[in-house]
Length: 386
Image (cartoon, rainbow, N blue to C red; front, top):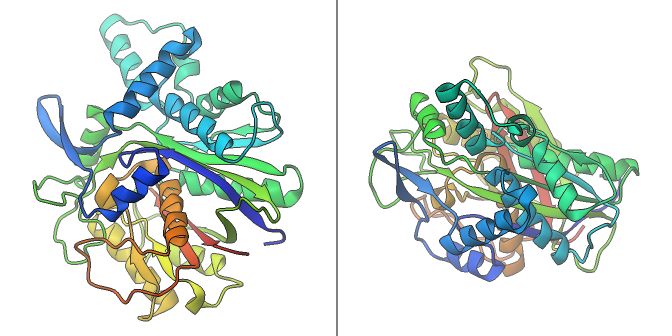
């Protein structure tokens, strides 16, 4: 890292809520936030945003005629982006870049318009602009009136952490001094869940913890979908308001054996973690927020990669997907949120059904992992101080 990058604010809305105190209290509870919802006459496990927050989303939709036809991924993003820049003491119209990604983009709206086309042979006038991936950052930029680049992308489930990579490059190059980064996902549709069932990775068993993320003894795939948006404000240099600093960045891609494959020992994660750790002794990393989607191969391969890099004396390991489900493109940023909260509170949030671990007295450095279909891995190392 040529220059310090401070994380000066973070905001989110997810099954955990959107108020930082409420989010932390939810993390302190061993209760999962996964429930069931009916899709095409069949109950499916999902993790949903609380009803009071959904009311805010609908209020936003009604606040401007232009917002009426936007997908929830965009509405989530607008609300969270407003809170993030407020927390960072930025103002609408300031000079900052925007990079907000999504794995699937305007899922709900695309499916709605496609169904209309199947039934009528016609599409609504604004079908195309409201379902493009660039729609997210463009609308956030419209709402915040920023002066700076606005970028959207999809790198499936590592999308939000790729936004951090991209913003870091802009900041280190001198082309920007501030960047709003994150991910947004509203994937709870019958078609999306059907796709996960087709891959044979979705949870089916009605037990206390339907998603057995980081249960290395499970015998079935247990992924569950959740909805969320989460964003961080990044700034160059020392900052008295910093929640933490980015001290390492790593990325890598596995060689594809299959469209959704990841190698048995997650070579992509081995490379991304090693790159993020280039200037950091292994023993200084206190915890890792694993990607751990709740699938047999996904969880075990990442764990094997951690053992390859750190050995048996590895950092404390955890994940949040057993509680909030897999939020696809937003998941990495929710991992960053958990990392910062654990550092701020000096308290490790363990997976309640995982094997007991030796708890370190201080949490000063945490790594966050994310990987998408095709083995697109990112590892971000954050510290309390640079």
